[in-house]
Length: 347
Image 1 (tube, one colour):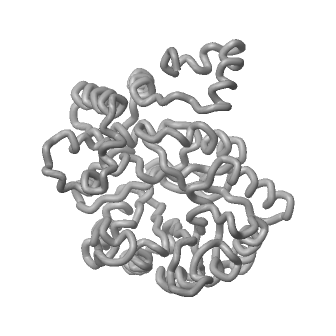
Image 2 (spheres, rainbow, N blue to C red):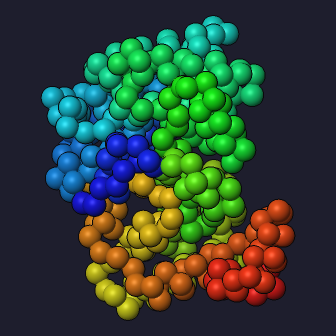
Image 3 (cartoon, rainbow, N blue to C red):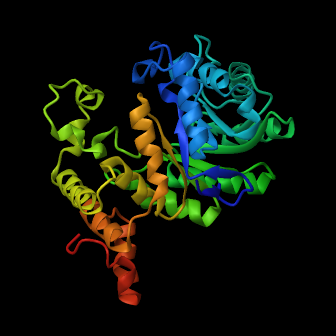
């Protein structure tokens, strides 16, 4: 499997990573996403390693810490050969200090994650969200100290806005702290907001993107067009309505055509393949509740879309630009019409 450096760091990651949110006993926050553990978890880790996956991502809040524990147990002695990423921010106790990005919580959260994962270091330690109540200087200094102490190798962020990412990089540069080398963000054919600010900022600042929800909670697998009686997680959550739009239909119709023309590839593989070709993307996090789903997702790294197929998917999924990017487009188009030629006319 292809490997890419995470941003402008020296950390190499596989283009497909494994998201361990499904590792749980079925309890705790996010525990309902899946209940994979024991021999099942070991088997899925084996499948990933056999396919060339080197990146395994989790978070302390996934199943109240059980995801980290199960991942650590499943990796065992093989931990030293892979990149382990986890996250901190969410509430992990009843104390006022058991949440957020304060120095106190970050250091305590890191120590707890190390213990649950059964490791001496975390390769990529990510703040799970932006904390408007804590100065960035405090958060970045705490991360810098964790790197200096050898408990963390690299720092990253998740779910930041563009200006928050840029401010964090500026503060880190000004103070001489460790800078973020990765940003974990939502991005898919159905959710392209990251193209407005986050991905351009990441390319400019050398921050690689790790993608979560690449299949839009499974919508891009195409299975939700069948009558499942409201039994799927996406249908039960009510989020299906957000994707079941004219754009969603156009995207699935385009994927249908690609799948039919190629043969032997799935809807999910097409959606993942499109992401692999997008600027700024270092790795895509795939997760699955069954071995069949996981095997299908991992196969996406074995082939590539053509330029014509990429263009068709771009047109079907393209959303209007927001201000001020929409305003910038007007003037940029005057200088280089080809730069925005792939956007729908009239938007």
